[in-house]
Length: 401
Image (cartoon, rainbow, N blue to C red; front, side, top):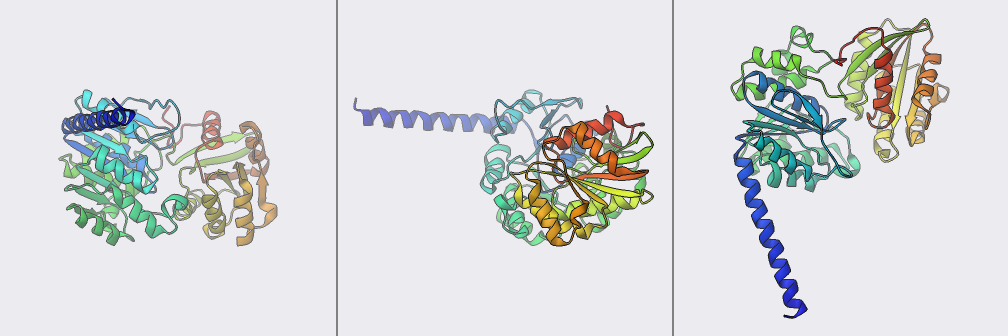
């Protein structure tokens, strides 16, 4: 046998193994009759958890997997554990999650799309999940270096997870034409969540949450649960009792030697539009605070995000101070100053320890202050959330443990 013959034989064997593995995976998928693939710019993790909680409350055996702040596998009884990663995140881990859900005899799997590259988003849906129900929360100007350069391109990339011959739910309105196109292409029913649907989520529906949840997310999750036979009140009760994602919008109050501070974790909001909306909502809620301090957690590997937020921050409203943490802080600072932010209001805390960052914030707080964290939850962001939570004087929305 020549070397060429050996090579052909090896390639043939590998191709055969790939076909066999594909058949096994399709059989695994068939054991999970309801497969819900959640994608979007903002709110993916929250919506994944809300849908799963609503289905569990309705008696549907449900597994869920979030990528979010910390990747989590959520079991049918609501308990969760970290997703093991031998190295960096890889979309192949979705196969392991699907196998686990099938082994647990799940009737439903709600799985957050973890891919950013458009091709990988398509691969995740077409080859891995093959969803019966797709969800796209929204399309915002984020990850433009990968999905851009424009928000329209982001919408096109997200549309790659439109299921074939399934149903696609979306809370997005500006880019509905893009999702109509993808739904038509894949023979999929498109169900938009309207402003009227969102308006039906009243303050009384949001108040029982242990964190600050968005009406848009709840409306979207309720629509999916209703389509799967779970009535509104049952689904809501399940959602109220569910554990929030570590990156969920939370608030903690503390008194540090006479300095009354409210710290709001909005780090998971990292596109300009979502960040601005949350910033203004929180500012209105705590309008009595003497000072506003915005903590911007920068990432050197997300320069476009820092630049966009720097350009937009003047439009949100008046912030007395900006405390820059993380890495590559100069990118945000340069854009913010060019946009008209007073350079003396910017304080650099790059590479400082969490306790040192806290001291900077406390020194700026004065008698009372609203402290809002934005841009990125990773790195020092999550550590700072824990620091404030562990020193808060009372359990606040979002603190469940």
